[in-house]
Structures are given as structure tokens and as C-alpha cells.
Amino acid sequence: MSSSVPPRPSEPRPRRRDRHGRGMRGPIAPPQVPLALSRAAAFTDLVHDSVERLERHWPQLSEVEFAVLDVPSFGEGGEDRAEGWEDEGTVPLGRVTSARGDGPARIVVYRRPVEIRTKNRDERALLVHEIVVEQVAELLGLAPESVDPRYGQD
Image 1: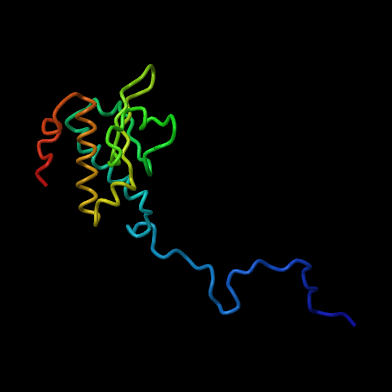
Image 2 (image 1 turned 90 degrees about the vertical axis):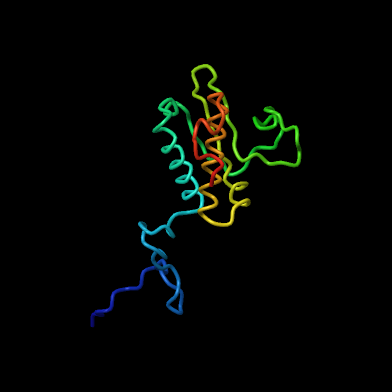
């Protein structure tokens, strides 16, 4: 007599759901919805938008490297410490580094200190733009008002 039931596999199958039918499910929101973006990606988009606004009037900014870091480095020998932190009570929101050798000039915006100081996306967008304008002004040796005439008006 032959059995029509296939033999059981020796290894258990990977479970996709737990015994109550819950477990791994699909994404919460489709990729085109803003909810699908992480906070870091949304912040990087704010910096990118601000840079695009300024590049229309200042084409030389295309040669500047813009970066987003979570927090400034406070450790021994860190760039931020070396560039002078006279006031120990303040945390920088951004930093500019002039071009050195064959490397481009670099502007860094720190995500976590900016997020802590703002309550919503609109405030965050305004503060990010002000930080980028201030750093660009420092790099170009100009006043922030000459880099962006709307600086400080919002």
C-alpha cells in the first residue's frame, strides 16, 4: 500500500505569521506618502531644498559639499572642538569648512540639535534654511541678508 501524503520536511518552514495570524505585514504607508520617509531622510530633503533655492542665485555653491550629520563630535581631536568652542553651553547647529588642498568646501548641518529646537516641519524648514544661509554667508564672506534677502524675516 502506498501513501499519497508527502513526507514531512526535516527542517521547519520559516513562519511568516505567529500562531494568532499576526506578524510580519506589509508597509504601513506606500512609498510615495511622506509618512514612509524617515526623519533623517525628511531632514536631508529640507537641507537639499534650501541649497537648491540658494544655488539659483549663487552658482558657485555647486562646488560646495553639503552634508547632514546627526550630532556634532565632541570627542578629543574632533573637528568641532578644534574649530573653537569658546562657549561650552551652546551646541552648534551647523559648521562650515573651507576648501583644503584638492577637497571642496564643506557645509554641515546637525540634525538632532535642529530637531530639538523646533516643534513642527514648518519651523524646522525655516531653521534649516537660516542655518544654511548663515553657513553660506560665512563661506562667501558676506552678510546673511546679502545671500538671501528674506533672511530673518520669517
